[in-house]
Amino acid sequence: MKKIGLLYVKGALPLFENFGELPTHIIKENGMVNGQKASDVLDGLIIPGGSIIESQSVGEDLKKEIMKMNHDGKFILGMCSGFQLLANKTDIGRRSPCPIEREGLGILDVSFRPMIGTDRVEAEILDDSFLTKGMDGKTVTGFHCHTYGLIEGNAAPLFLSTVKRTDYQNNPRKILSGARNDEGNVTGTMVHGCLDENPALVDNILEFVGATEKDILEIKEKNTELSKKIRSEIGIDTNISAKSLNSPVNPSNMELPKVLMMVGTGSDSGKTFLTTGIVGTLRKRGYRVCVLKVGPDIRDLVPSLYLNKENMEKFSSVQIGGLGWMDLENVLKDLKNQNYDLVLIEGVMSAFTGLLNEKTPFSSAEIAKAANIPVIVVSSCSKGGIETAAVDIVGHIGIMDKIGVKTSGVILNRVYDKSISKVASSYITKMTGKSVIAEVPKVKMTERGNIPEVEIKLEEFCLNAMKTVEEHLNMDQIFKMAEIPEFSGYLSYKEIVSKF
Image (cartoon, rainbow, N blue to C red; front, top):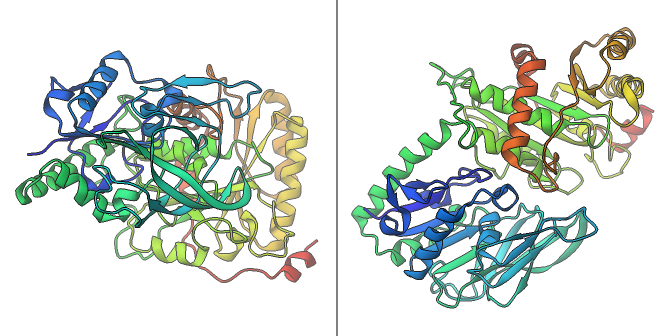
C-alpha cells in the first residue's frame, strides 16, 4: 500500500479538511512512523494548516525527515501554516511595530507577511507540479483562512486566488496563493479544501506516487481508520480522549439539531475563548458539536476545530450584509440530518454591531431573531469594570427583548473581584429577570496572543478555555438552553429602527 503521511504536531489542524481522504499515517514531532523514519516508509507528506509556525512544534528530528523526503523527490504539500513551514520565514507580528519573524525550512523560496484573508475563492493554476500536472490555466475552488497571507519571493508561482476582501476591507483582486519548488515535488498553497473540492488534484497525487486501483482502495480504508483515531483525541498530544456516546442526543430522524448562540456586548468580550471551552468540554463528553461564526471571520472557529476535530464547512460562516459564505436559511438547510448533537454559533463583535445598517441582516441579533435562536450574553469586565459590564448587559437584553431575541443566560467574563460581581449579578437579574450563569475570572496566559487573530499557541489557548469552562460553567445547563431553530425571516430596517 502507498503510505501518505499527515503531520500531527501541536498547533496542526489534521481534520480542518479531509485532504482528499489521502492521509494514511501520522507523523509526530520525532519524525517517526510506527517506529521507522518517515523518509524511509512514506511516499509523500501533507502538512496541514493551523498555528504550526507560532507553536514552534517542529523540532530538529522532524525537520531532517522533511528535508530528506524533499531530497528523495517525494511529494510534500504544505497547506497554509504548512506552506509557511516550507518557506523561508513568516512575520507573525501583525500588531507589532516591528517584524516578529519565525524561520521556516527554506524549501520554497518565499516569505510571508501579515494579510488577513477569509474568503471562499477560485484560484487559477499557473504551472505544472506533482499536484497540478496538466491543469495549467484551469481553476480550483476552496477557501482562505489566514492571518499571514502576503507571499513574497522567487519560487515559481502556482496558484492565483481571486479575493473580495483582505484585512477587513473590500479590495477585489487576484493574489498569489501558492508556489512550487524548481523540481515540482514540493508545493505550498493557501487554498484550504482544494483537495476535497477538486478531485483532479487528488488524481494527480495518486498518479505521482504510482498508486494502483488496489492501492487507492487501501488508502481510502486506511484513511477512514486514521480519521477515526485522530477524532478520538481532544486537541493534539493532550492525552484527553473523547468519550463515545451509546446513542446520539440528536437522532438521525430529527431534521435539525438544537442551536445556541454566544453574543457579546462588544468586541473582545471573550466569546471565542468561552465558545472554544464549551465545544471542547462537550466533545470530551462524547457530544458531536458543530460551531459556526456569524460573519466572514472564520478564524475565530479555528480553536474550536482544533479541539473537536470537525471540518470547516461551507455553512460554517453565516452571511450578514453580503459578508460571509452562506445565508442563514441555507445554513439551516445544510444542517439538516447532519447528526450533530448541538450547533453553537459565535456572534460577531457586539450583538448589535451592524444593526442600524440598511442592509439586513447585518448583526448577530438579527440572525438570532430570524431563526428563533436563544442566546447567551457575554460581557467582559476588563475594560470598563464589572459595573460597566453589568450596565451593558442590562441595556443589551432590553433591546433584544424589544426585537424578540430570547436571552437564556448571562456570563460575566474576566471578573477580578467576586464581591463586586455578586452585587452586579443581583442587579442584572433584578433588572432583566435573567440569570447570571457564570462569573468567570480573568485567565492569565503565559504566551503572547490570547485571541485567534494574533500570534497564538492553539494548545495553550484551547486547554485554558476547556479548564475555565469545566471549572465555572454548568454544561448540562448550557446544553438545555439550546433549541431547534425555525427560520421565520428577517426584520426590515424600518421594523428595527422602530424598536429604538
